[in-house]
Length: 297
Image (cartoon, rainbow, N blue to C red):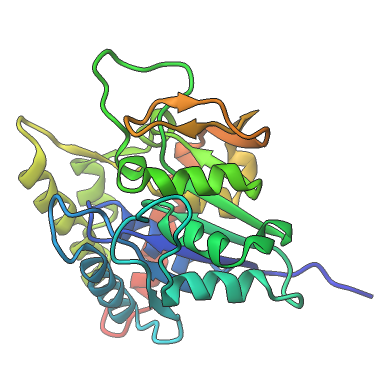
């Protein structure tokens, strides 16, 4: 008699040094016993803040894995830059990891969370178009909202860093769960809560809060005491998809300016809201449990 698997096979593709929220999502995934993290891929985040953004992401992934004692988790480099066009893949160890895991026939469904641009997924699809026939779900934190846009609103950051890749993925027909900007900004935490629930949780908790506040100081032009943990809904959807309010929409394509264009006839499941209470409290509890189990705590 077959048994229901106790773990879900996942990959995290992350521009981990881009801001300060990827770190929370990575740690949450690694602390979740039902997630079998098959690998973490370092993603680029453009050249505006760094000429070596993918390598910066890789260094941050390695730092977190070291702090958590997780030398069992595979880490790979993704593409160092955006696709040159919609027909040319950028091969990388990260893209090959995606292909390898998606092609496995002995391990059940695969979910891949993209916390930055879709470059590595697009590369994998261009290298192996047959991936669309595998039991793979792309979970993307990115893209604009579908109904509400502020006047003068610029292109969403993760989309801006590789519009061509987004078009490759959305045109392909692969299964996509999208968390657009209008939804991911709703996962905010305040400094007071971070100081109370995260910072006391050992070296790891202190680092997470410190790097978040330091990042805020570099980018905010006015007073601030909060941060949206905008990448964490991707982990929440892996753990508890019923926590998301979804609407199925025609999958769009994207203009160079980030506007929605008619698509290729596929659909995308758009997460319009995620249960922030569950998401944040689950993370706080798991981090507290992890810290309590460390020697000397």
